[in-house]
Length: 138
Length: 132
Image 1 (cartoon, rainbow over the protein chains, first blue to last red):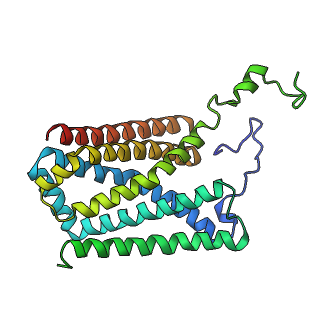
Image 2: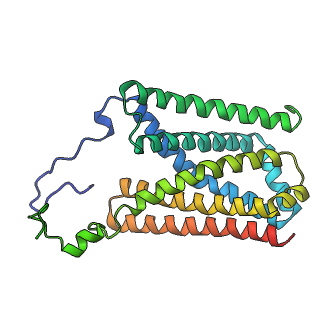
Image 3: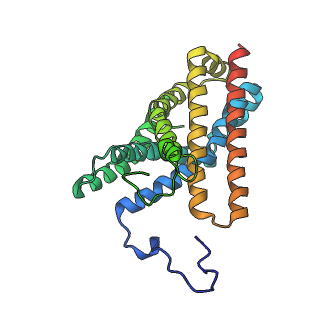
């Protein structure tokens, strides 16, 4: 709680927070999971803009296509792809942990590294496939 | 009254319901997991759909998005995603916003935003599908 003063005005001890601990990979990936989740929250605006534009007609859809072709649009879309895959793989890792598996000292580190390598690798592969389907890099 | 919790002030009915002081039990946690499991396959389907739509013109995209199986899949993806993100953002807000009035205001904004985004997405998919 933010309010640490008791009614008598005496300071109450707070439970230790992030800055107390030495950063570990599992901790950083837990934070990354939350950040990518929050990013995807606002990323749904992109998804809905695309759907509404498709429903509205060729002109509105052309505007979305134009934006996605720009450098900013591609960066946003690339970030969205990575956040989606990273949050998805991180979610699967958390489901494994929820089920009670993968808590060993090497297992948990291995799972965490696999999430990171998997999300970056899959994002690059997806964009490579995407560019191939668009007929190569223009 | 109870052999297990002799000092508990809970009523027997409250213990049977097992919903705790917030009257909600583990529903929030469980729905977060339920939607996350559903979203694994829905997200894979969404990514495959996006790849198949790359470079197509508006007419072709409308034709594909409006077809029944794709529309139903997209409806599931949008509604389950929005419910999942509504639950998730609620946890983030409860973790970081401690001032009561601000917290309730931000929680309300979370609900308004999620409902608006979800309904807009559903409306667009239905319009695409019924407009064909």
